[in-house]
Length: 119
Figure 1: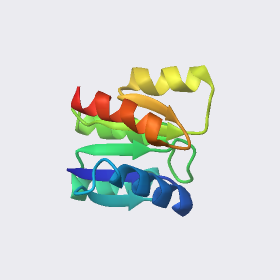
Figure 2: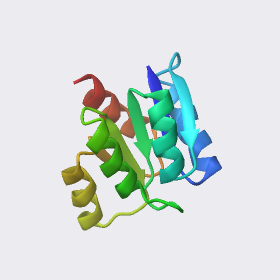
Figure 3: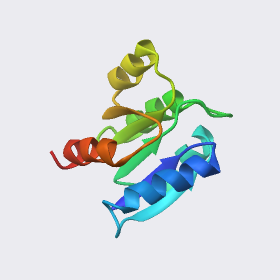
């Protein structure tokens, strides 16, 4: 499995990767710092799963999601965001994100993610 973690915070990238490795220890991980890097990394890495922040410089997570799903409609994207506005959640889910998980990621939320991915 290949997993792309997109977040403008290196700390959040590391925390997310560390937590994900507890259920996907053999996965190959790649990171991107913003939506523009995400689009480039996605095209070259072709991940099975993307964990996407929303509020980033250069290009938002919402725009990156839209562009990825336009070109790769079967992509699995899970939003990890501190944004708790229901309108934002509804927007990304209607755009095609698989799930919206509030930061920080933890073991309980990982179980939800695992069920979504494998279910």
